[in-house]
Image 1 (spheres, rainbow, N blue to C red):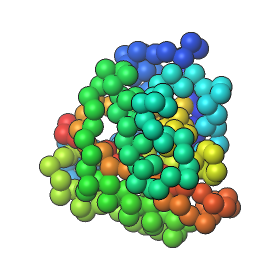
Image 2: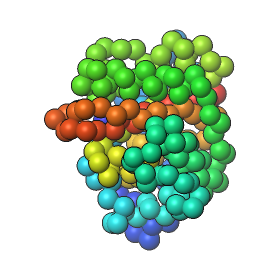
Image 3: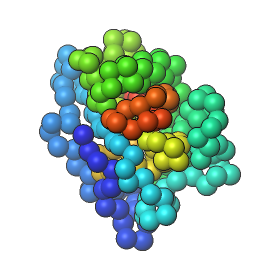
Image 4: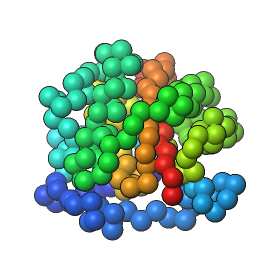
Length: 211
C-alpha cells in the first residue's frame, strides 16, 4: 500500500499545517477495532525511490552529527534501531511535535512482524494471514496504533533511506506526523531475499497513542 515518491514542497520546506492538509487518509486506511475509538492506521513502503540527492524531504532528515550511524548499513541491528529512533524524533521535533518514547512491547511486535514477513516472503501488514495489531499491542494502555513498513537493498536499506522513503509517501508521512502518538518501537530484519531481491533489510515501525 502506497509507493514512496509522494510529491513534496518545491523548496524542501513545509510547515506541519501544510503537510497535514496535503495528506488526508482515505477511508480504507482506517480500520475500527473493538470500538469506534480504537483505530489502526497502516502504511507500507518499498525502497524504489529513496533517492536523497533529488528529494525535497531531505530537509526533514537529521544531520549525520545528530543521529550517528543513520547511514551505516553494516552496523549491528541494535545500533540501526537506535539511529531510527533518533531520526524519527528529530523529524517530529523539526515540525513541532513531541518526541516519542521507546516501547519494548512495540519493538517486540515490530520484530515479530518482520520475522513473519521474511519467513512468508509476503511484504504486507497481514503476512500469511497474521492479525494486526498483535495481541500484545492491544494489551497496552493505548487505543490507537500505526505501522509503517519498508524494505530495501544495499545502500537504500539504511535507517535514513527508510525514513526518507516514508517521508516521500503522503500516507506514511501522515502517520509519522500524527499528533496522537506517544510511543514507538522499531526493528530491522536482514533477510536473504524478498520480492525477488537478494540481501534485503526489512524495517517495521510500530507507533501507539490514545485518541
